[in-house]
Amino acid sequence: MPRYEASFEINSKTDSYAARRMLEQVYDTIREESRSVREGTDDADELLEAFRTLRDAAKRPKPGRLTITYEQYDSGFED
Image (spheres, helix red, strand yellow):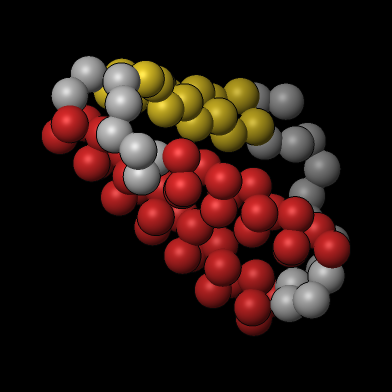
């Protein structure tokens, strides 16, 4: 299973603002996709809650690290 990871160090208010904007965009994108594909399912609600928590945490500007991990599974999508 291939795994890709990128970390973004948050050392200033400008970095914090950039991280907040990234997480807001990710949350908005997942919310829109969930509405069209998974609306009302438990996994969509859990996914949105997890990203809402990340988005809300980024609203408080503090030093830290944002790490994004992408793991690709060996199996493909079901048609």
